[in-house]
Image 1 (cartoon, helix red, strand yellow):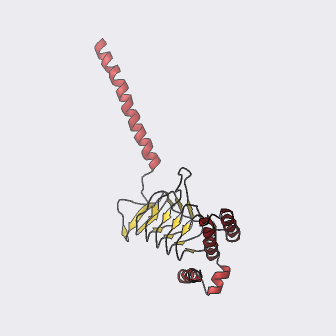
Image 2 (tube, rainbow, N blue to C red):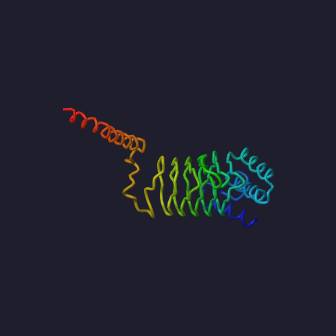
Image 3 (tube, helix red, strand yellow):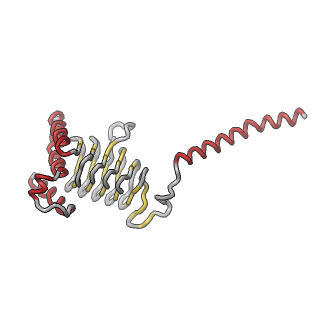
Length: 217
């Protein structure tokens, strides 16, 4: 337990240049407090002390503004910077050395059952306000930009931006066929497809009519 506490404090000091001491982190950092509370709540959850687990998590949520379901699985050296508005769902899984910022949601879409929330790999950074929704994986060493809405799997070593999120870099190299600025509008594409289908159907309906008029002549 104490080894984990030391790790959690050390990762905050390493990633937050504003952190001046271990005592400051322990007493004043809501992200650290939320992670420590979650580790207790998750232990209770795994040992079927579900009411106590929820009580610990909800108490922590009221104090820190960070809501982590006790069922979520979180790895080592997890750092929540600032933290206000962070929500992590029940079936979310987070690897080691992950950093997330304020306003991040690791949530579900409402249409899945069982595994409903994302799996986040190791050494992932998720920027402020990003929403990751659904039971897919964010690959190791990936970066999710602030404000992105991720609705599908992100490969390892990738950078994803936008709404909906698109991969723009893999291993530091730009993905040329995915232009974040000129991404096609999916609604416009679907309308164009429907219009083309309607035109084809109209042509099929009008063709026999034209042939009948030729026979009457």
